[in-house]
Length: 237
Image 1 (cartoon, rainbow, N blue to C red):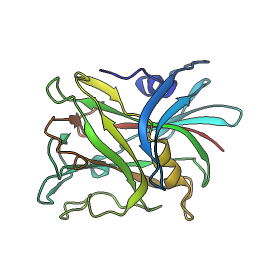
Image 2 (cartoon, rainbow, N blue to C red):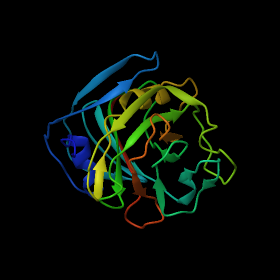
Image 3 (spheres, rainbow, N blue to C red):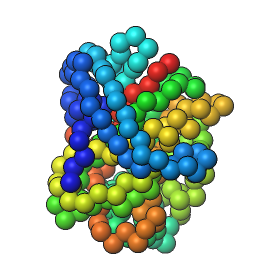
């Protein structure tokens, strides 16, 4: 079933120039912080009018801001198959068996080091009704300057992981756009890095090895025009 959409998810579904005023909702997911503690995250958010800014869009009222970015090109999303083969210029990321990995690289234009992340969610376009049941662990690459993806063997799984992670387990989401659980602890660890600066990039890793993931999950890569993966982040400076 599709999860209730948060304000951030609603903003992700709108064009960058659209507006969403005084919305409020909740989203929840199972999260693990950098110390290994697991908990249910509950996020409440309020946003004001949006305006386009470069790669993404931002909204803000006072100190609270929202930034929405999408995959910029084909070297910023990739699939690693069992055996380590990395596919960069491909159409789908398929995560339907152990040792499948997806990699997503986003540039964050303005989030400062140490900002407080209040919510962060991916939006992905599921390719079909028979590939709509994620069984994933999502974490980040622990680097303030992660490289673009290449066809090198094990290019995704060999990257150093964050201590924080989020489990995404859901069934029958249906074809079309879907929104992940909150990735707040992962994004918080990334922007807390000592050498983090606004305008740098992050990598999120979608790991199907958490469980014997025989339930298929497949979503479109940026090669499909108009269907590139997106990331929305709400934060306080």
